[in-house]
Amino acid sequence: MKKRLSLAMALSIVISLFTMIIPASANTVVRTITNQTVTNSSDQRINGFDWESWRDSRGSGNSTMQIMSNGAFNGTYSQSYNTLFRIGRRFGTGTRISSLGNISINYASSNYSSTNTSYLTVYGWTRNSLIEYYIIEDWRTWNPGRGDSSTYRNLGSFSSDGGTYDVIVATRTNQPSIDGDRTFLQVFSIRRSTRGSGTINVSAHFNEWARLVRNINAGGQSISFTTSADLYEVMFCVEGFGGDNLSSGSGNITKLCLTYNNNRVCTDNGCSHCNGSSSSSSNNTSNNNNTTNNNTTNNNNNNTTTNSGGSNTTWTFANLTFASNQNASSYSVSNGSLNVNFGGQHREVRYNLPSAVNLAQASSIVVNGSSTNNGQVAIKFFNASGQEVFVMWNNRGSTANWTRSLSAADKNNTVTRIGIMSQDTGSYSATINSITFNGVSAGGTTTNNNTASNNNTTNNNTTNNNTTTNNNTNNNTTNNNNSTANTSSELRWTFANMSLNRNVNASSYSVSNGSLNVSFGGQHREVIYNLPQSVNLSSRSSIIVNGSSTNNGQVAIKFYNANGQEVFVMWNNRGSTANWTRTLSASDKNQTIARIGIMSQDTGNYNATINSITIR
Image (spheres, rainbow, N blue to C red):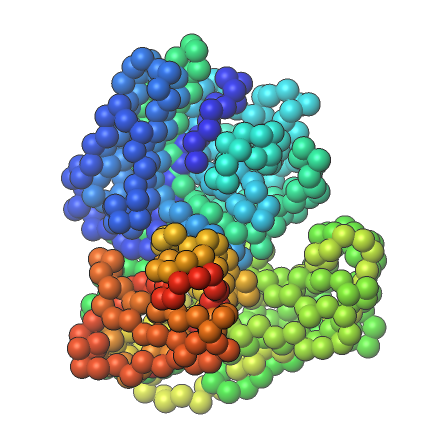
């Protein structure tokens, strides 16, 4: 979203990327935009990237953005009031930060210069709460850390990726945002030692902001940054701002690599950032079908510690060790139970698990506990780097088991720490008695019930076509976007695993606890989501959609290929929650599906809730 910022504030340069690796040789110019404001629509993405060239008409000069087929871009501008070049990924609505796992960017730039204010920055927005964020790697002339302290408030600093970042917040009152003119918070991480290339652990910034940006008064609103917020976008952009003084400059992004969950996009196949990562979404996965165990369902050869096929692990806080207290009034452990008196909103106590738990084979996590005054409690899980990977919530009130069924995205994580955080205002307390990991055994043992022949494969065996821990294999056998759906393992996804593709005239839509809720507002209104990966249906037997509709409304469940072409449709049974099944025909099995659409078939106003999609 573009905004006209004050001369003091200038702006951003944004990069972001999505779910595929682009061949290194594919570096020709595929689009040139001159002296125009152009934003792509969903069917105009370049290798899965959203992009934008934007210029303020008040300038008298020129701007040119050249987008390469491998995802890089070159940008130049002269005598410009405000110019922005950006490429990345918009997730839209309903994608929580915590659902994306660890987010990191590796980038390289060249020819970055400006005669006036400019940022080279990671950039984006969140909803719930509405926040505009920046991770500024380089800048020219001015940055918010140099602004008036009455407007730009310094909350502290932290170290990440070999540098120190200052965290600054500011309020924008009735200014343009992704939701129209609104009052919202801006959050900045500003690197003290500027650079034009390197790795940015985006999740580390999100986690620090969750710690520092709490209950900030923004135009009468109390706003906090949380990793349970919806992440609208992650972008990387070059922007120059001169205002009435005008500005000239340039910026080329020569390499972009983004990783999150089981996904990666990169301009360079030989990138050490990609090769050194444990996850990959390379499109070079066709050789997965050539291994001896193409239909195995267990990654025993990942050398992880807790990939058990059938045991459960239960710990009390007598087994855990204290990690940190984030402003909770008091806490204690008695008879294995943790008792926390929060004393306010977003107060948290963290504890280390006795051992790291790889969730690849886990089915669910069950937390037994209670809260007073009907208080909402977030149960947060962290990896060894201290990055939050997902969150579950209590049922409020009396003692109960709170269960999270693990999604494919959840199973890509290894958790080492648990946090107990208050979500409501006011004073209340929580008691947490135990944590159970169903499907894994404690202490690093592997009681795998699956066949030993898996140990002889070349790490091509996948459970849900989502394996990401094949550290001892080549890069071509990890995220099997095109080939692993040919295995016989069942796939089950909720909308917490998916990203928004587009809304086609539906009145409203949202994702809550993994379920998509759509208010259509009329006939033939549709919301389309991207599946976590493409699925080849050649060896599949059926698709089951669990959902419901109000007012006995008819709902079409539409499936699309990667080119956006509808390949077949199934319909709901109307009314109350049920499984809607399509037995796949021979012609269906010739298809590879990449998107799902939820469309109203009847006139009038009715809603649909879609809970899950299972592909067998």
